[in-house]
Image (cartoon, rainbow, N blue to C red; front, side):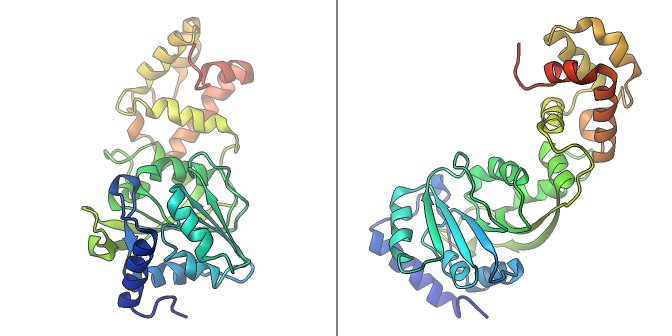
Amino acid sequence: MECWKTSSELRKYVFDSLKEMESKPYYHKGQNFLISASIINFQVDHANIKPSDTILEIGGGVGNLTRCLVNRAKFVYVIESDIKFAGFLSDKFSTSSNVEVIQGDAVKVEFPTFTKCVSNLPYQISSPITFKLLEKKFDFAILMFQREFAQRFFAKVGTKDYSRLTVMINLKSECQYLKTVKPSSFYPAPKIDSAIVSMKRKEKITVNMNSDFDNFITLIFSHKKKILRSIITNLLKRKGYGELRNKIVNNLPYLERRIFTLSLVELIDLYKFIRTKIGEDLWSDIFSLNMK
């Protein structure tokens, strides 16, 4: 069942909503509203929302996507940072018993429990929100990103786009690039293409699901073009464990490789090797993100 029958109907809803609020979109806040009915219907259809689903929407805006979610899901949580827009959403859906609007910064707000996330993310918070989602338990997500950002999910090892984001996405989820969205699908039109991506959480992760591997990847990818030998040597010195250089560094696999040439499998091997070599106590000290 289509949510919006025509783009004309959707555009009228968006423009009428902005007029009602006596507001205008602010580009620096990521306020670009979808005015293409086919795109919103595509998102909702691919989310495959069931009557038992609890949905998280980040960046509710004027509710053009929210309306579709509320009509299908058991419950919808909408996080909106803009006070005026959050108030508008609360009023708009005040008669709906299955929606709660949370006013606040989605990067800082504690996410409620949800089964699916369907969101047109404000592009300036795409990175922190993606990492935050990867820490949560959920079934499935349909997310809109800036196309250039989304392409990093699928970057090949050894390319400039291969990054910490690529590694953690592939470790914890299965993603599909579903659709490119042109600027004309938004009001106001952004200067770049967007992309719709699906994300399914992996049921089994190949490394322990604590923060240790995350910290390890964060540290070494902060210098991703450097050689592994140099990174580990400098890290040991900085943390006051220079005497361990011979014990650890000389026996490392992939010693002369640059970080961005290491695959996920190789990074996991490296992580396990170092962790076994130095033990739990030293690991917590050396590879914590807190600098001495």
